[in-house]
Every structure is written in structure tokens, then in C-alpha cells.
Length: 280
Ligand code: R5P
Image (cartoon, rainbow, N blue to C red; front, side, top):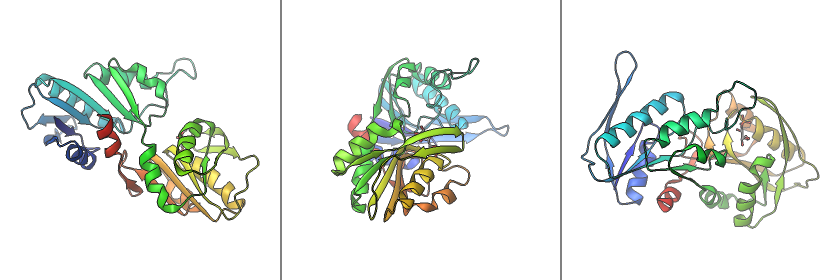
């Protein structure tokens, strides 16, 4: 087996190859002077099982992924598996207002037509897996988050909205602590309004768990409620840490912020490589 990584995941790809005792295949990955991408696979992968690891975020990384898929296909790989740790565009899975593009369908359609199977990790909307024209599965990275969180001895898991209830319920079960689900109403891309209902957090160490942290609004609002309620320590954990704009500033209300390596950044504390290796 060969593992090939695009520029979003050199480190994760190498750890995955190591976990799976596979070859980590080099790639010439550069730009032409006009900005167009050039990809060349550096090993003979004819008749081999190949795993490509790359995010579909930001936009330019999608082009990189499509070129890698094409190169691997044309080089005669026996099977092609595409691992997309962070599936960008998974939040637009339907038409909310007439005339909109179903972005997830467009991106998944292009990728799925060029490989045999796809794995995503904690994808925001699991129903988008149906848009891939091949076998597609979502890997649950919650166990990796929980393994890391144990060190903080949390006494409560807080779901910042209804959408994160199931993921948080699993984490709470693994951590053997209660779960509290908040209610969130999104006002716009940067603003949310959250209510907590009855919650007793005085002196408690709580962890707020979400799939994505983007502007930090969801977590900061929930964390402020916990602080006002007297929580002693508040941690925020997510699988996909985008941390755009002034997210870091908004999240200063938290004692610490932890995210996985589906998006590598300053808050990356744990790897989802073992979960991917298991699934593969
Ligand atoms: C939305 O439903 C997601 O699960 C996250 O809660 C959301 O993407 C977080 O965005 P932000 O950090 O901008 O509030």
C-alpha cells in the first residue's frame, strides 16, 4: 500500500503510512508562474492500493486533490482511497434559498467519480456521503478527542447546540460524566445566541465539544454562560479547528482549546491517524 499526501497533510500522511506500514510516496507539488498547480507522483504505483490524504479546504486544495487523483488513476493504481480529514463545503448540503449551489454535491461528485472509496472524519453533515459516486464512510474521531481530554478530568460535557448532541453524548459516555445540551440560534455567520436552560456548573470542570470551531462564536458564547454559572475550568475541544478572524481572541474565555490534526494549527493537540488507520 502507498500513502500520498497533498500539502494539507504531509505530517498526518506520514504518520498514517507509519501506522499502516505502507510506503509514503513523494509528490512534486508546485505552481506554474501563472499560479496553476503542477502535480507529479514520484513512485511507481501501477497495480498498487493507493491512499490519498488531502482536505477540500481552502478552495485551492481541491484542485490539488483532483490533480493527485488524476495522476494516480492514470498511473494505473489498483484501488484509490481518498481520505478527506476536513471535508470543506459540508455545511451546504441543500438549498436553503432558491438558486443556491449545493456545494457539497458539486465537490463530492467530482471527487467520487475518480476513486473507489472515500473516508471523511466527523463530517458536519453525514448525509453528504451520498453525494460521492463511490463507497463513502465517515470516521468517528471522538475517541481520539476523549483520550486526550481524560487528562483534564472533565466533570461535564457540554454540547453547544442540538447538532452536536450525539457526538457529545458518546464523549460523555466514554468519560463517564453527564452531558448538558445548550440551545443555539444562529443570527449570522459570526453571531449566535445561546441559552442553556437549567444548569448547575458551580466549581465544575466542563468541556464544550463541537465538530468545527470557525469564528469561535459558538464556543465563546457557551463558555461565557458556563463562566457566569461559576464553572471552575472551561475547556473547548473540536475535531476541525479553522480558527478564522479573531477566534483566538474570542476564545480567551476558555482555559484551553484543543483540536485534532484534521486541520493543522497552533491548537492541534492530538492526531486522528490511529482512527484512520483502523478504518482503512
Ligand atoms: C455548526 O453547526 C457547527 O457545528 C459549529 O458549531 C460551527 O461551525 C462553529 O462555528 P463558529 O465557531 O463560527 O461559531
